Image 1: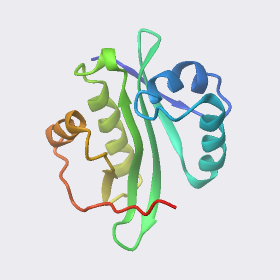
Image 2 (image 1 turned 30 degrees about the horizontal axis):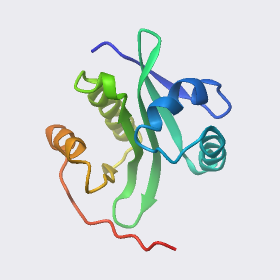
Image 3 (image 1 turned 60 degrees about the vertical axis):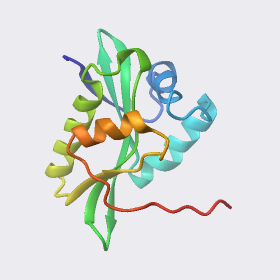
Length: 143
């Protein structure tokens, strides 16, 4: 797969025109206003978006950030990793994940991690193929 990977900054019109239609396949609760607001608030905290383009069409999106904690020291956390439904199994997710792993290594990260909903079995098979493993349980408390 020969996708072009592009960093997309806050305020870039491609966030709404290109990335959002792909991202809502994973995050259906997002609309343009919520997405813009999250990125505006999240960017100063390190949130970034990487897009995969194939022939000028956005076919994948990764939201990610560097985090520092006592557990892993420095890690690259993937908030979102989604490939357009009609482009799945074509190497897009692999290309995004490989680029993020390279960025993590360059930043001195000890680990790259992500959370995946327990119902996302196809995604889990992909992560296992990418040599990821389940290292912990993630607990939430709805407020």
